[in-house]
Image 1 (cartoon, one colour):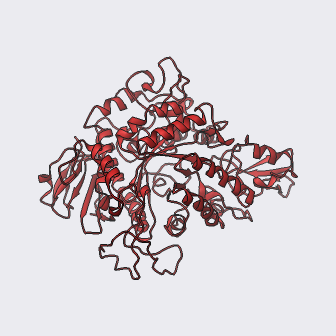
Image 2: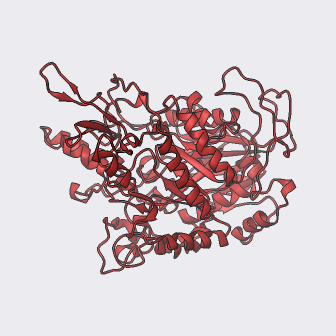
Image 3: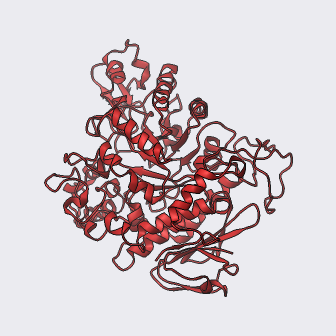
Amino acid sequence: MTQISDSLGLLTPRLALVASLRMETPPSSGGSTWIFDAVEIDNYPSPTVDPIVQVHKRHKMAPHADDSQQTVTRQQRAWWKEDSVYQIYPASFKDSTGSGTGDLKGIISKVDYLKTLGVDIVWLSPIFESPQVDMGYDCSDYRKIDPIYGSIEDVDVLKDELHKRSMKLVLDLVVNHTSDQHEWFKKSRSSKDNEYRDWYIWRKPRFDANGNRQPPNNWTAHFQGSAWEFDEATGEYYLHLFCKEQPDLNWENPAVRRAVHDIMRFWLGRGIDGFRMDVINFISKDQSYPDSNSAVHAGAEFYAAGPRLHEYLKELGAILKEYDAFSVGEMPCVHDTKEIIKSVRSDRGELSMIFHFELMDLDHGPEGKFSPREWKLSELKSTVNKWQQFMYKNDGWNALYLENHDQPRSVSRFGNDSPAHRVQSAKALAVFLGFQAGTPFVYQGQELGMHNVPAEWPMEEYKDVDCLSHWNLHKDTPGPEKLAALKREYQKKSRDNARTPMQWDASPHAGFTTPEAEPWMAVHPNHVEINAERQVADQSSVFHCWQSVLAARKLHKDILVYGDFELVDKANDKIFAYSRRAEDGRVAVVACNFSAEEVEWTGLPGKAQEVLISTTGRPREDFQSGSVKLEPYEAVALAL
C-alpha cells in the first residue's frame, strides 16, 4: 500500500488537510494561493551554501555576462509552481451523449474525480472549431467551440465548476498555424492582392535545370514530405510545418500578432486561467528561408528558435501578466539551454515554463521517432540532472512530464507493462516524476497506469496522422521484416498510444461511452483490469499513489517544490536516486528501482527520519542502515 506522512501524523483525511492548508495559510507564510517575490540581495552566496532568506520583496538580479544565464540560489514563489496540472484529451475522456466522442459535459461530470486525485489545473487539448484533420490542432475559429465537444456555455460551466473547487482551467492555444478552412486563410489564398495574403507565408517556386517547378527550399514537414504546398490558383507555395491543411501564420505581420493578442484577451476575459501554447517556438522564421543540411526535421534550425521569437513571446507575456495567467509553451527541436532559459527566466516576462523534448527524444533513432533506439538509465539521469540543475540555478522552471497526447504511455516506455510489474513500475514513475523540481503534468490515464495500444493491433486501428503519413511513405518497402519493424515502432511510439479512450470502469467501452455507441477509437482491452472505478476503491492502486505524491508535494513544498536537486549514487545502473534540499537544510531523498530485479541499494546518504512515500508500505525502520533491498520497481521518498 502507498503510504504518506506529514511529519506530525495529522494527515487524516489526506486531501482534506491539503485543502485546508491552501485556504488557511496567510500571505506572509508563502501559501500556495499567493504569489511571492524573493528578498533583495546584492551578492549571492556560493551555490554550495544553503541560504535562509525571507521571501517578501522583489530581488535584484546578479550581474551576468550572458543575458540568457545566471546563478540563483533559491526560487521565487508563484502559485503555478506549487500546483499540478492534469491534461485532458477531450475526444477520449468522457462521452456524455453516446456519440462515441468525448465532450465538455463529459468532462464536467468528472470534475470531482479530478479533485479527488488532487490536481489543481485542468488543461484541455484543443476544443475550438476545427475540421479535425489533426484532432483540433488545425483551428478554423478561435472563438467558437467545435460542436462535437459542446458550446462556449459548456466551457463557462466547466470553468465555474473548477473554480468552485479552487481549481483552474487552461486551454490549448495553437497559433503557429491555423486550419486551411480558417477565414483568414481562405481570404489569403483567394488572391495575391487580398489584404490577408501576408497573414500566411507565401513564396514563389524555384525551378531546376530542366525547368521543373520546385518548392522554395528543402524544408520538410513534421508529418512527412515537403513543408511547402503549391497553390495552383495563385502560382505560389505556402508553408506548412505540419499537414498541408495547417498553413503557418506569418508572425512578421503585426496584424497577425494583434489578432492573436485579441484571442488571448477574449478567453482570459471570460475567466480562463491560462494557455498551453502549441509549438510556440516555431512562430519566428529566418526570413531568408535557406536550404537545410539536416537529415531529420530539415529546416528546424531556421525556425525552432527564430530571430524574433523572444520579441513575440514578450508581447504574449505582457498580456499573461495582466491576468496573472499561467502559460506553458511547447518547444520541440531545441536542446540549447541558453535559448530555452530566455523563454522562462522569471525576469524575462515571457512564459511560466516550457515543454522541452530532450527526455522524449531518448528513444528516437538516427532517422527520427519511428526508428529504433533503446534508452539507458544513465542517459535518463544525465538528461534529468541537466535540466533540474540548469533551471534551478538560472531562475527558470521545469514542466515535468512523461506523457501527453503526443507521447506513448510512460509505463510502456520507461517502466514495465508486463502483468507482473505494471502496477509497481507505474507507481515508481509517479514518485520519480512528482518529486522533481518543477510543475508536474499528469496526462489522463497516467494516474491509472494505462498502457500503449496492444501489440497485435492492425494498421487499420491507427488514427494518428503522423503515424499514417509515415506508413504511407514506407508501406511499399521491400521485405516483410522491415515492415514488421516499422509496426513495432508504431506500437511503441505512435501518438495513438495516448489517445485510446479513458478507462473508467470494466463495462463495455470502459464506461467512456454508452454500450451501444461506437467509440471514435478502439478501447484498450485491458480496461477490465485497469480502470478508474477499481483503482479509486483500492488504496494500493496507482491512482492512490499519484494522489499521495501530489499531496506530499504540497505538504512539504519548501523541500519538494522549492528545494534544490542533486543526483545520488550517480553511477548506479538500476537505481535512479536524487535529493531535494530546502533552504533551511531539510533534505528528502527519492530512490526508484528502474529494474525488474531486487536490488541491494547501498547509496542511502543517511538515516530516514520519516517515510514520505513508500510504494510498498515500508516502515521507517527499513531505512536506518544506509543499505536496503529494493523490490523490482519499488520507489521511496524519505526525509533524512
